[in-house]
Amino acid sequence: MTMDQDELLKVRDRYDAEMRRDAVPDAANARVERVGAVVRQTVPGLGWNGVLWSDLDADTADAEIAAQVAHFRAHADAGGDGEFEWKLYSHDRPADLGDRLRAAGFVPEPPETLLVGRTGDLAALSVEPPEGITLRVVTDEAGVDLMMEVHRRAFGRERPRIREQMLNLLRDEPDTIEAVLAMAGEVPVSAARMEMRPGCSFAGLWGGGTDPQWRGRGIYRLLVAHRARVAAARGIPYLQVDASDDSRPILERLGFGVLGVTTPYLRRR
Image (cartoon, rainbow, N blue to C red; front, side, top):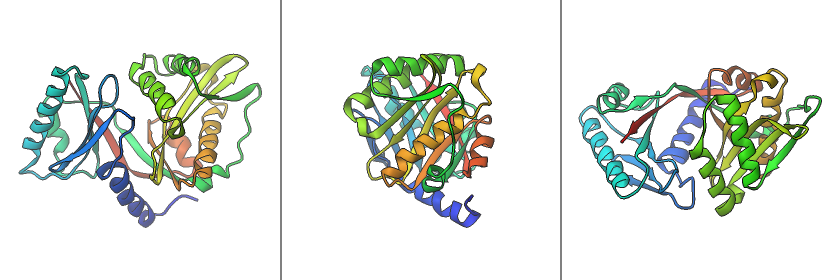
């Protein structure tokens, strides 16, 4: 059953507190810190660098944006990645924060809908694999490379950051990731992962992509249900997705509710 508006607002507040304001690093070598009115993550190599949360107003926003640009420029000068992201949510303030980010040289990526569902409800879904499809849990580099092959076909681009992140998690923190492939015989046709940070109420569903020739057969639903069962066994109450326009209607039919819209603002060196 989909959450009503009052419950969604309470869940959004919990999400902001746990996953943004009090965020934990998404990799063993990452550092999350609160600096003034901003929470940011800094990581060497190809990991995710960016701003997770902010508490700004019209008087403080521009100076804080400049401070984060300077921080990540220094990080790049020291050998870090030259790109970072300001993850903006539709309820963030000030209301013109997106305009201010663009004026500072950030480029918005396509917006996504932040969806949340109750893990218990989703784990109870009765979803049978389509004929000829089996699931394979990914535990090693060979499996990660099969996932990247699916992503190339599904999204039309390489994803070296995701590959590096997954390899690091499987090596350093295997209990925090569930990566799974849908296989047609020995051919990977769909792939997805779930990230579960210690002590968090939300498991994040990421990277769900299916080969265009295999879409419309229920494989995406199958991967959601599989990950929901894993999260339920861990006692995690909610699943969270940054959904594309293609995924959103499927997830809403499964019972996910809308918390808002999130837009990645990227700044490259």
